[in-house]
Length: 151
Image (cartoon, one colour):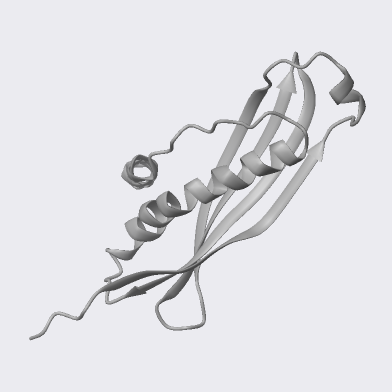
């Protein structure tokens, strides 16, 4: 029996949503500026598209920038991609959609956020690399822990 051919393809990468809000502009630019502290929230999601073997993967990141407990900006970006996964089993697909695809999208997300900040007259923010494989393994461990709880 022949093993089905597997195909992984990045069909498209795009910005699904981008919101930048400077708080109290232009006054915020007139004050002494230090490097802001950033509170970052990240969410990864995916959904199957109508076309066979196509999936949309989205990394949503929100960032709140503060200096001395004063909020100076908010950013919300959804970086998305359309991926073709052909010939993968139900157990092979999740790590691709939740770890590999977000790893491909993350540099684009970082670039969009940096550009928004610079265009908004703030210093670019250097976002740390994210190990999406580790996040996926952590998610699996948490799900297993929930199912292991005996009542």
